[in-house]
Length: 160
Figure (cartoon, rainbow, N blue to C red):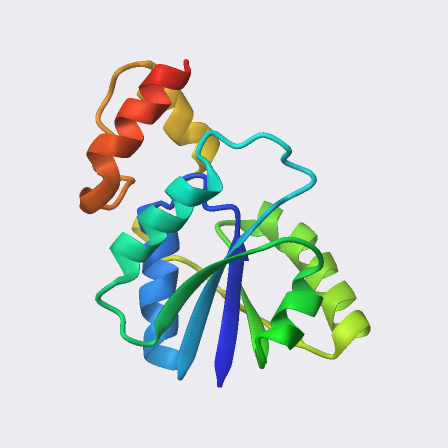
């Protein structure tokens, strides 16, 4: 079974990586799909940076690939022969929004959505939180994969 894990990954966090690692153990193939989100027109990291970061931190997982897509997720999933969509839920607030998306995606394409919670130590991580921490000059190492932490920190600090 092939599962598609979409997101903006701006930037990828240890929470995202936790979900990817667990999904790679559950599914035959995981495609991490960096979406161009019309609701988030500006991102701190370019598509190329996000692609590079994701490829670097997922390189140990032989059944994980990374790509960029634009347009409807369901169209992309069908084109890539995805059997399901993977979404992570950090908290109950995420649930309502994700439930609506899952129902809509199923109505459009018939593709099911599978939900995973990140492990508890990663459930509070968000891009907004990371930006605030970086602005204050604090270490991001508890939240960002070690392989990209230095570069991500520099970019976030420069963006303030």
